[in-house]
Image (tube, rainbow, N blue to C red; front, side, top):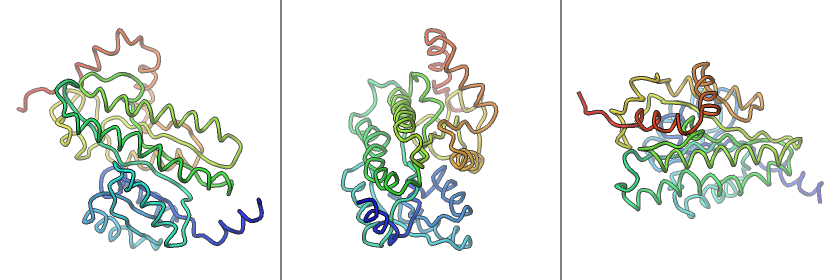
Length: 272
């Protein structure tokens, strides 16, 4: 059976699957993996963004494919596996970068938006990881890099569902890293703080205090740290020394102290 599996995977082309690759951290991670010599399948909802990303990365000389899919749906996740099978590829590295946020009081948020956040930030990560991790274990190679957030280390009033979704991603990552230890597979989570992307404006948090007071990194800086940490086999990757200190604070300061502070930082001040 082992020899049959080896022969099966030997006939397939290993490829890195990067979700949310049309912009932001996902796009920056695609550049890092391309520069590292990985062939890529870029996945996102925005076809134009995918085309632009593929054109920018063409100079790296790796094979770049794109797939337009809505990963907040079961059909969208299934289409990734179908695309790989149809093109004779296997998922060597899975980068779960697609995600959305919601700002403001939980009780005032739209129920459909909340369900979509849960579907994309948690269900899709679970679905895709379950689809491709068994193949990685059978080959004894590859891995999963999940884009989480420092916010996943504590509750986040004003972004309650988003923070909770990233807590799930961190917990899943650490559990799978333990389950797969010694089997040749890397399981990592990248935990950035605020990043200079369109993400904050899309969830109505562009005027929140945390953006003015805690510092903002570029997507490229975060991606470089994420790729290096993944290659080194780090389980939790904190980009930048400042975020290491933030992570320590979130781990050790009691919640009764930390939660009101986080809630204040996540509040939206008036524009101007």
